[in-house]
Image (cartoon, rainbow, N blue to C red; front, side):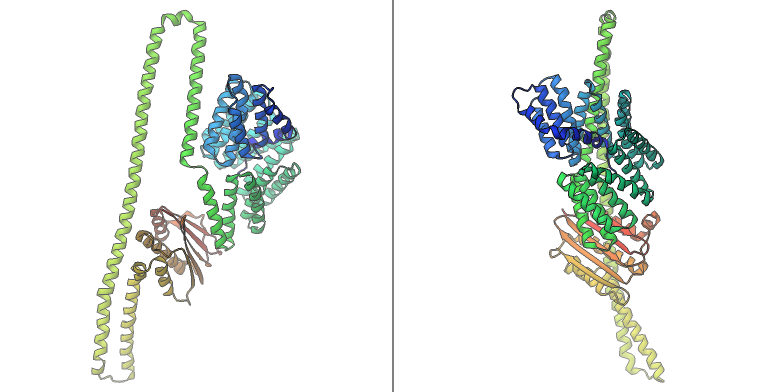
Length: 606
């Protein structure tokens, strides 16, 4: 997880200054003699103080302050409150609401003279675009923020920008540029003797070192950062550092240290209601548990991770952020046009009066053109959306048709084997057995060879029945998924591989398509283990709850390198992915050479 220093660097310093002043700020708010402007400034100070301590308190302060705003002067003071309410929503995972407050604050700061807050707000918006992986848009806002801080000769602000923008280049996998930017930030922090800034720069540098597997220098940097933050008694930053240490120890294989670090981080994250940090910690804990062979804990942590993740950023929120940015840019351009027209009126009033009719016609024509063009683009977007939806529907129908045709063909072949080949083999055995008394064998050797022929025919009958039942097991039709899988693994020779099956919540029948697809997927996974894994033990788990169906297939075989994409090009693994995606599910492969393989499948509930 990549740490963020934009708001933290600014707010931690401000929090230190305000911690001793909260009582006096509350006194100003509660004093009837205080002016509206004084009260709003007090709200801004309190919002800044609580923005990294109590996110709900920060948001509540914003709601109280909004009731006081009545004039443009009030709005200038209220902008500070808006900014910090946006920060509170950001750390709660309400990114769409955070974007709304950021753009409102930005609009007011651009009209005023508070350049410091203007730069901080631009930086927060850049971070939000970085979160949605719109990296080019993120860099544009970072550049604007850097220009503001350079115009002020604000080394603290420039120090933040070097750190924050470096993360974008990490995401672009341009690690040398990321390191360069973090190092620039570190130089400024050391020159300013800013321990907070030194801590963040070292954390950012350590993040890249972990990616590059330079674990020793990364650990040194993170432990130095942790010591600084513990001395500052900054529990929020300490929690972030514990998460980074957990990531480092997990990557280096020191699982016990990693678990301890994530648990310490989660304790603080739960108190702060910092959902994103909790989600990242649970995902890492799930990965560690899986690596240690603790499937039950891995599943529990993975469910906690997905539960929090699903409540965070989604497509609707991302769309709203884009719409808010468009609205902001449009209003800004309209203001620029109005300002330019006003200046033009003062300088060239005579020309404007003579050509006012022409200007009006041109403006109306431009507006009409923009209106028509906008309508056309919306129509194009709507048609493209409908076409994409239709393609998705057609793909789903095609996939369903292929799978249904495949199952019908399996049933036909199974029936032909059972009723055709099987019956003929049985008849052949009966005929051979019936003529045995009529044959005068020349000796025991000839009699033994005849008995072997009957034995081969008998074994062939059994093999035909086994293949027929595997292609369309009666247990799946009669008793359901768990019984069918139990019947399937009971036929596997324990001398080849020992298989354990655990099932829960499958007392009621599932949809026939779901049962059939899951049976084929698990059957394919087991066959892959037998053919390729060289394993002697296999665990299969099937759990149905209100969130859906979870299945895990884990062996102790030779494993494989999941980073090699060609491994997933085989027909078997492709079939597994296709079948799971048909049920709107997810499948993950967790494996390392020499450490076995874990296949985790989740099918969401209806």
